[in-house]
Length: 117
Image (cartoon, rainbow, N blue to C red; front, side, top):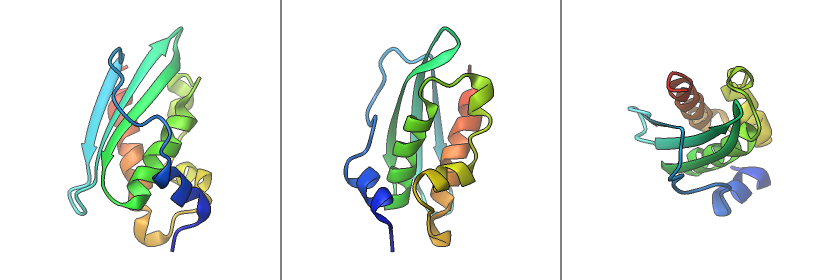
C-alpha cells in the first residue's frame, strides 16, 4: 500500500522529538481519525534553523511529519506558506488517497505555526 519513501520516513523518521529552544510550537489533531501532530521550530535570522515533530497516528502521519521537517529547513515564513498538502505528498512519492489526510494534518500544523511566528 505504501511506497518505499513513505515506509522509510515511517521507520526512520527525520527530526523526531522535542525542540527545547523552539521559537514556536503548534499542536493539531485530526478529529476524524485521531492523528495528532506537535510541530516545533526555531527561527534564526528569519529562517527555520531547526524543526522537530512529535506525532501519534498512522504510518502516513508519521511519514508526512518527518518529510515536513525536511521541507522546512532554511525556509522563511513566506516560503513556508507555499508548502501545501500536495507538496508534502509529492515529497513522499505520492500518498494513497485514503491516507492523504496525513499531509493535510501537516498543512494544518503549518498554518497554526505561521500564526505564532
